[in-house]
Structures are given as C-alpha cells and as structure tokens.
Length: 338
Image (spheres, one colour):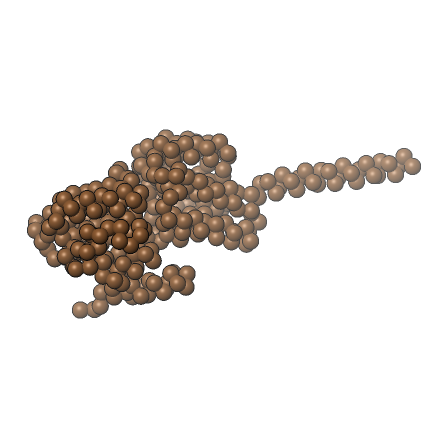
C-alpha cells in the first residue's frame, strides 16, 4: 500500500514537473513585436499594419513560434508622443520593435534605450540613422525625390514656378525626398521653387495649405506633394488646385501610389507618382525582426525596399495590382520606348 502511494506521488511529481517545463517552453516560443507608425490617423500605415498582421499569422502557422504584433502609435505625428509610445512597449518587455520615426534625432535616445535593454529595433519608412537600430527598411528617399523632379521636369518643362508640400518638418524620409528633388531642380535655372509648406501629416491642413499656396502664387506651374495627405480629402476640397490641374496649367507629381492617387492620375490631375512598398513595411519588418532574433541573420544598415514609378502609361497595371492584391508582377515601364 505504501509502495502504491509512493508510485502515485511520483507520477504526480512527474506530471507537475512536465507541466512546468512545457509552460516555460511555451513562453519561450512566443514573440511579441511592436510595429509603430508615425501616426495612427494616416491610412497609408494601415496597409503596412495589415502586412504585419499577415506575416505574424504566417509565422505562427509555419514555425514553432507564436508571433504577436502590437500596433501602437500616437494619434497624430508627434515625436515626443512617439517616444512615450516606445517607452511603453519597452516597459511591456516586447521582443522587438519596428518604427517609422517622426524625427531622426528625437528618437535616438529611446531607441538606444530599447537596444540596451536587449530589445532589437529596426526602422522602416523613416530612419533614425544615428541610433543603434540594426537596419532601416525603405526606399532611397533621396533617389525618390530625384525621380519626382525628373518626372515633373518631363511634364512641366524646364521653366516655371514650383511649390512643395511636406508633412512633419524634420522627418528624415521627407527631408531626403526634398533634398533629392532640389538637387535635380537646381540643374534647371528656369525653374524656381517658390515655397515649401507643411501639413504635419494632417489631411485637412494639407488641403488648407495647398489652397493658400494656389492663392498666393496664381502663376504656379508645378507641385511636388512629398506625401499624398490632401489627396485623401473629399473631391472638391481643393477647387483652385483641381481647376489648375485639370486645365493642365499646373503639373503635380506626388509620392505614393495608392488607389486614390491612381484615379487622380487616370483623370489627368496628377502626371506622375513615386511609390513605396507599403505592404512590405509591415510584412517584411516582422519577417526581418523574426530572422534577426531567431535565425541570427545579419542585415546591412539600409535594406532597400525598392520603388515604383507610375505614369499614364502603366497606371492600369498598378490599378490591377491593387484590385488583385498581387504586387509580385513587375510594372511595365513608365514611358514607352522612344
């Protein structure tokens, strides 16, 4: 009888020990990544968010890890608030962070704090190059700005007055686009950049500053929308710009290739687009964080996501890509062979 009791006791101990070990093992096999956009009120970032969730689901189904994504950020683009968001996820003990930085310098200390705490950080879309992040995923924004300038010159000609619309002044990705744009335009002494206005990533403010600029410069002949903010507004919100664009008096080139912009291009209100890989901001970032932590993969300081150039000659192919959610096929060239 005594022997039977010891046997039962032994079985219970083994079972309890097994449960403890399995619980610890299960905990070790879970990874939580924070995916942090510049702001939560920008529809562009929602595409990246969906990509991040899709990759987390895929990794959970195909590996031994349960991967969770925390989609967190400030409501509006604000560097100080973004610092607080990162502080919060550090406190929560996430396993990795992917962030689009509102300011290249303001986030350096908090990124370094995360890395020093053993939380790897990578940036996407907008970089903090002086931080300890292990890589930046994105287009060459400088080259994107150059491409935008070349598009505008091709359609507008080598003379005219041009205005620029940016988001948050100081954001590294936007500043690089502007730098690339200006480096091309300075080769054309007949083109004058008359002003650069900022909308702080706010759609309504974007509408307002574009219309105010149209009033202030009635002889304006070109625009570079460094982002697409005001194009998300309801049609008719920018009557001065729309009239000038429809008449062909003002040529506008914009960054991004979202469906709303593709329609504007089809109708002739935009003449060219420089696009980013929005889905990949999330999808690729989660894969890279996973590979960095689990597979110990090394990445270069900059990981080129590539970019798309869209004009009236290949806009239909890009529209089809959005309709089918298939971005794997290369676009036709933006201009026919001459």
